[in-house]
Amino acid sequence: MDQNRVERLVLGTLPAEHALSADDYLAVLRPIVRGIAETFGRNCEVVLHDFRNPEHSIVAIDGNVTHRHVGGSVTQIGLDLIAQGDAAQDRLNYITRAPSGRVLKSSTIVLRDLDSHVFGALCINFDVTDLRLLASTVEELAGLGAEPQSIAFVDDIDRVIQAVIDEEEVALGRSIDRMTKQDRLAIFRALDRRGIFSLQRSVPHVAEYLRISRATAYSYLEEMRSGGVATGFRSSGHGPDGTALK
View (tube, one colour):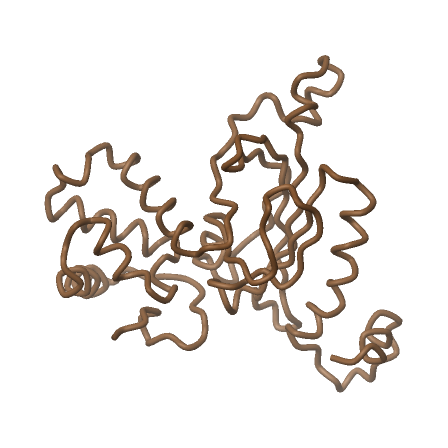
């Protein structure tokens, strides 16, 4: 998208018959990413995600709070929003914990096109670790009343998948070596609900972690889906069930 078209979009002088695409919106938002991050300083990070490519969803990032880069993947929260499809809503002022242990106050604003289809998100992460050590005057700003959620702020989608599987294993309350078939099916349902199977390489990764064959994993997925389990947004380039079958 050329600079002239960006300026006409911002100024509102682009003819109405020219429908805006997701790429148009992302192009307009890229300079805003830097503006927000620079305004709030070194403790702020702003990330622009394109959900159409979850494995490499970061198309712009400014700030170094989570040490990620352009081309990095979505987090668990991004996967949850993708799974919800067009029903996804903004998540504002929630507390997370980065792998480094730093506590972040975050907001994720869902991006929609003119047809109200969700295609991405603008995320703001503010490091409030030091603020949490200050007096009660900053307690509300730092979100001290909320327990931080551990988020896999990493560039590698495999590590995000791993983090979601770990969360579901803890929620189930049973270690992998003690899981029955029904336990594994429960894990598959939870992962499907959270959008894991819309990602490439997800089924082999889940199979390896659960110590079952790929054939068994695909069998579980088929058995689970035959019961009418529905999922949300599917990224392009996948099969009808959102899984990259090989």
